[in-house]
Length: 226
Image 1 (cartoon, helix red, strand yellow):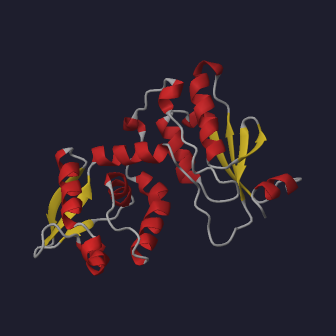
Image 2 (image 1 turned 180 degrees about the vertical axis):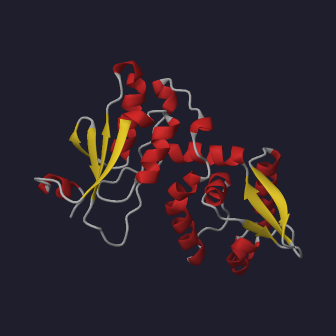
């Protein structure tokens, strides 16, 4: 599949005001699963030394919780592997990042079952989703289930901006254009499509289909390098 990592979407270009009140924020945890796996791998490989604001919010938005040690209040137990990094891990920087997020009301510190935890707030989840909206990708499973995910949309001309940006998202997530308003992907992507339907308020105009077979699928398979 083609690498589109350097592509980004700016909703401001389309003069669209995003309304996150229409989004089921709890269900959006699933679209951060790729980030959760990536950051977990980075931790295991000792590459994620000092996570930045954006990275922390993505981790928390995936449903993860950061625990704070009572002995060392600035040291997150969830990133205990950092202890082995010695001077490479900047505890003060991490503490300042958490404090800044707390002041911005993007995270909150709570006491649960004798533990001090950092949890993301609704405002923090919205901020993480704004980050995610510009860089969504479809996670590639270890093996393909031989099914096709088809997205069909019929968005009226009066909502042309919504239609154009919705199509652009599909393109950047590497969907294959079967027709102008019919796009195909081999991997599960309902949660990503549902998020786009909600944020752009086009739910009734977009249909998600899982198909066992598509006729003459050679070009599609070639696109996805099958």
